[in-house]
Length: 313
Image 1 (cartoon, rainbow, N blue to C red):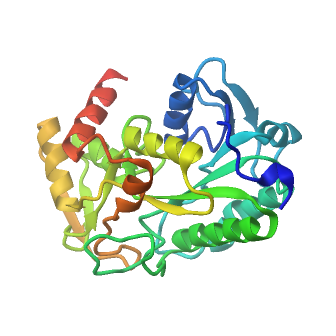
Image 2: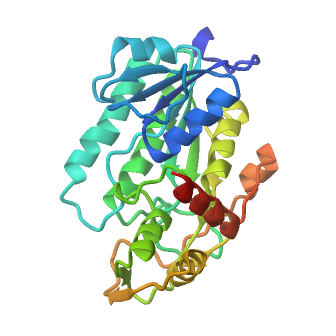
């Protein structure tokens, strides 16, 4: 391992966010700026929501501009780029591999000599697959049932490979189902955003199966706090679940949003999809014991804050 790639004792002052125009990226950029980091936002397109004064680099992850590589030197690099969403289809698998997996491996290769710390945003909702576990720990078998989850897991493994071969400094965050301000239903970014739109507009809500599938929803401010801690103090090469540790059924979630909007929900039932796991609730005891992180917001608080943000737009 080269001198430049050994763990640093001094705190890093720079943050680079790959995929900064997405839901998590916007919120993380704002938090990083508030914390006083020298911030670089990288994405394909500009966002009006980036903090004033942040450095902006536009481009494609598959062919990163030289100025991005320069910005990454000495930085905490948050990899939030994902061009697809979980689906049962495999018709986009080749594109998914090219735009997500191959692009990431190419960037790892291009930066293997840089002194930077990676925090990769993986998926706690898809990499584990079907399970009867009440809560899923990081040691649970990973058997994804979607191309999305398979690609996320493959990227994790490449980070591990580059860590072993080149001393690449990285931490993996397996995030459950984040929600909150700047999440877009139009972009398919989350169930809660979609439910707000459909209930508010009176649009029928399609429920796959019986609506009793259980998910782990975590408010975005808790997610950005966890990512910040992982970037600063997460243990080199470790995987950390980031979730609420509590489960909520789809039907219960619809009821809560319908109640806060004071509007009835129109439900239409459809056959269950093969891509949907029955239960997914993350065990967050590792990040709690290692870094002292626990969610500050329960589900109802997060939904209420999201509602206020929607009303104030």
